[in-house]
Length: 21
Image (cartoon, rainbow, N blue to C red; front, side, top):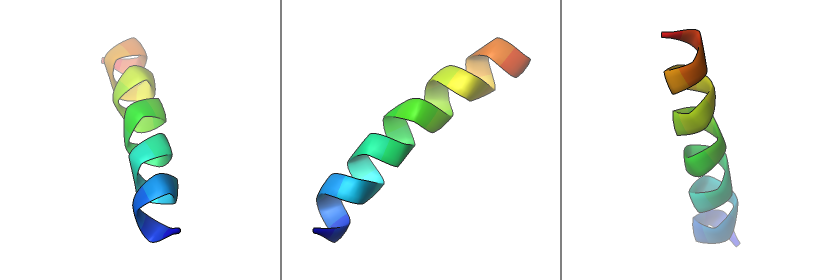
């Protein structure tokens, strides 16, 4: 449960970080 949640959040965070930078 934690891995799935963290994995999804990590991928979304990377895309948002790239867009902001």
